[in-house]
Length: 458
Ligand SMILES: *Cc1c(COP(=O)(O)O)cnc(C)c1O
Image (tube, rainbow, N blue to C red; front, side, top):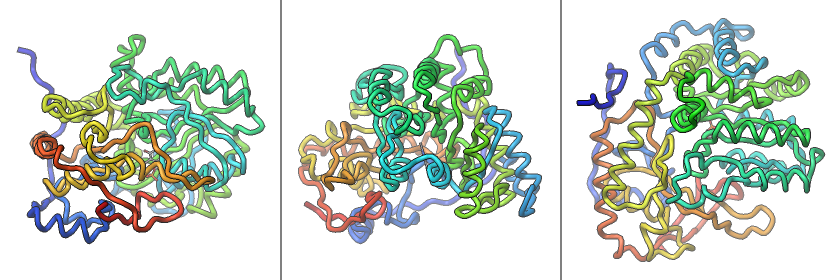
């Protein structure tokens, strides 16, 4: 018999989590204005809000913390991080930042001007926030297959080259400072971008003289999918794939809280000397000196180790297998999820799951609240709340999909937890026809509203 897959690690330390009663949860979520970001972690049993900074570190990473060099300038830990990033990506400059959005803030302060256009596959929310805050525009050129949750196309993060070329023709390099490829494409469901597509985007961008940057939070998971799904890469190591992928870019921003396997941190890596010089100045005013950028030396040491471990095949296999395990359970129960199953999360199609909740009453948020009330599980809405209002018209934007994301933290929960999550969703699914009402907004901020919005029952 073929041996089943098992994790390439064992657990050395545990953390207690708490069950609660349905009546308690109903009270807590009401007091949180029906916004799951307002819940205390002690009110949550299984926390799938995000896979960002919520994972477990290895013993080698914990050991690396103890070797951290806290020198203000030129620390040994910076050197370790520089060497690791340089070896993995080939980029010659590195600027650490305190997290991914800080990397965006620094880089975009140099490159993005009012009225600019930033095309790419679906931009991440903070990325879009940093673009729109500068009165520039993000244009989504993702392939149409990405928005059909049952389409099994293996690279649903890909950029549609025709859409991209139209944007290039209309605005040209005067208005377009760079094209941004998000790997994996978070907003379209943790879907990967193929090497073939990355190469083609590079070639097209070269014709128009436009640089290519990567929003890299889940670059290792993307490389795993390239190895598994793109024939030419099946015999390549993850590290070889990563190196090739970055050879088609001019630089990257990184949220180390994902594939860096650490709890906080980020960085920019790039080749252009002039952009590096300018970005260094912004790093100093926003983040810290250029060899730490808001990170402790020990955190840079743990990150260097984490990046190395995240780009090992056995780790990635166990990571992605767990997401597939949960996704396949849900499919078995008839629950509508996005397919193929993504890299860091399972995405549930709330429009199909809750057909009786009007679109204007936030079906995905409604489902997130129902799942929390059912079992103390915290997921996150990827729908109208997240899509926010159009910055000019202030109208609600209706994205093509209305999803509940269950993001799985790295190396944190067991498959028993996955079984519990699947059972809870099945229970909600069985009473879906009784759920006919959603929520309405009572207060919202001007930008990135989903984090702090207040809701009440519609
Ligand atoms: C998380 C993330 C960011 C922002 O990073 P933070 O570390 O949360 O600030 C940017 N882009 C993508 C694709 C992300 O997943």
